Length: 615
Image (cartoon, rainbow, N blue to C red; front, side):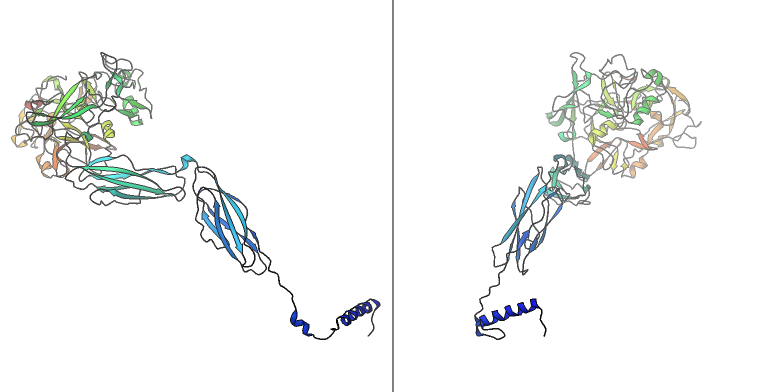
């Protein structure tokens, strides 16, 4: 073997070492006493980078561990933060949690500890900053206003959710009440149920909760009072002025101060062993009307707009909220003054004035045993304290008394945007008024609430019998053809029914009325067509309709049901895309109940032909 100089030197060094140890190339027992020690190095830990998140975010924390034998354990914990969160797996390398909702920014600190069983545990921390939630972004919910209903009513509850920019779930539940009621859909924004039959007034409470997965669950409650048959003495049906609020535009003629609005007080009083509800008011309603395009068009398209309005058109614009008595541009009557009624009423009617009245209404009406025709002036009181008048305006064709004009027809251009006007200062309506419907919350989705009471004490409900179903008047328009039981020989207005309640009595000759296409002039000098139905004598009660029951009313424009007892209905009918008043409008031509000696009304005679001119 040939060796280089450098390899030779290495070989010599190795040989020298072997000789010194006397062990080169051989085994020795000294191997059994080898003290060599293996060292276990502590792991290194990194909890990750700090993060900034929003409420509701899913936050992930991951630890990076370096260890020489991969035999270690992990433990996560939260060490600081106003909110305590729940980590899904404290012993996993990766853990998650949902960032909490908070109205101020907060920092959550998490520590991870790693131990290998030999060395001391090694720790590291990570900070998570949770952004504040804006106060107005915190979700909230309203369950709606408390309601008073009657047994059998369909009650609708509607939740309004505010400040939610994310999806949410709703949940309705009944939280009080002696009986459990069935809700139509407890997860819908609007739910409905049928008010149960109760022997005494009973309160049911419902709670709606909303959860958007981000904010705390929000909730609100609403109370529904189910009453027995409502009467004049139930304060809940009256719109009572509890703050002495006054009108801004109808002023006391003596003091110049606004007249008190709505009803001032309702009390019960016993007179001659009979119980009465005593209602005090000054007859001025609180109507705030939002102007629509239909209202603007109705005012501007009047046949005498150029003279009825100061500038020939209304000063109101779509979207304006007009207070009762506020100027909308009319040339008003002389007793109306600037900012005190002038401009709210078309020419002709008076401006309303303070009308102190104390009205006695029997708590328990008595069915009438005699014919009691109702006449001009008050026949009842609306729940806001203003007056109810009957069908007539006191005028007749050529002032002969045979063909009496109907106020809702002949006074079409004489009423304000709420369908009313004043006579001798007494504000009243002869027909349905949408302004009052708005006040009592009647939108036609269930049986109408009470709009007022007739002088006999019976309640007057709005036009709806149930959801989308109108109560129907059994008064119909005559067929004037010669071969009709209600007609005249010449097919014209030359005869009148002997008895409008019983057509079997036939007809009798009277002074002729206008032809059905003839134009007639009203008190306000407007020209209208005298269509069939324009006059009182154009109508009769069809008892066969009443006999059908259900939605059909009787001769008094009322009927009975087990929930409400006997009651009247205001009547309207569909007219294209809208509605119009239907004869006899509010109550029939006669009272269904007896009038007491202290009644606000009195019986008239001769079917109202003695009513005379308007008050």
